[in-house]
Length: 183
Length: 181
Image 1 (cartoon, rainbow over the protein chains, first blue to last red):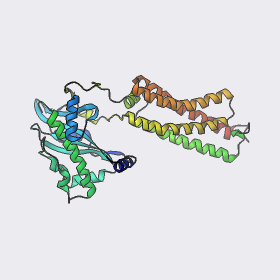
Image 2: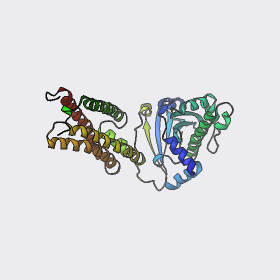
Image 3: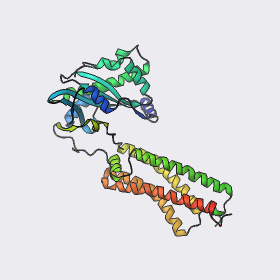
Image 4: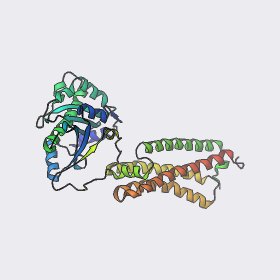
């Protein structure tokens, strides 16, 4: 990052607005793991080479080197898995929940947290159908929600859709690379 | 001594009263903010400044998976607000000079009170020691042991207590003392 960009980022960080919850986590879990009656937190502690591989793929390292997948089951049947991914933007953190089917495709995406400043952009992007464009994506696919809503929403909504794309790309890379086993 | 709040001009007394009221308001909201984030228990403070206890302090040689059951209610648990080293540096940088200014302002009030010299010295020491303890506790909690959270709590309570003692004495001596002029 060159000096002017650093200065812009620092200036932006100095006026980050408070965080707002757009979708409560329990609601996101029930929407993205529908019908599940048992939940499990699966923590994947990455080795240094695996963490490096993930970082190289999507320019991201999970906090403390741990990926957490929330797995839903109904009896012995798998319902799917869910990740909460944080994206740090110059306007503050954004949290995206990405749910997967047992077959490994994206069931749905919700933006669960943003900041006061970003909230209207997120709502506009979601209103323009942003999250519909992630359904059925599978690891290896590139999310492109920002391009999909171009022309249907304002510049800031399109910008924030690009940040959501990053979150979905991270979830896809993490799921594809490190999620193993049932569900 | 020339500087005695009991006999000070009414304008000075009013200035000191307004200063104390303003600081009191900021202390009330400071306490509310602490209750929202770190809380008033050693456990809450330790969780805030120590951060998440790592089950694996170092990356494993090969990627490892741990799984545990969860209830829906656990998803609703508020996330613990944690302060990492970078944020603690920023907090210390911003707060310590401000606390120093507040301690200095309250100490100037103490100097104008009718108190025995040793009590005044003790009170001034408490006013300045409290923020030192507050931040020393945070740093020690982060890098030495979570048990040092108690030091932060002692510092915080000392700050509040020091303010209350100074405010009570000042208001009493300025407005209710028989010796006032």
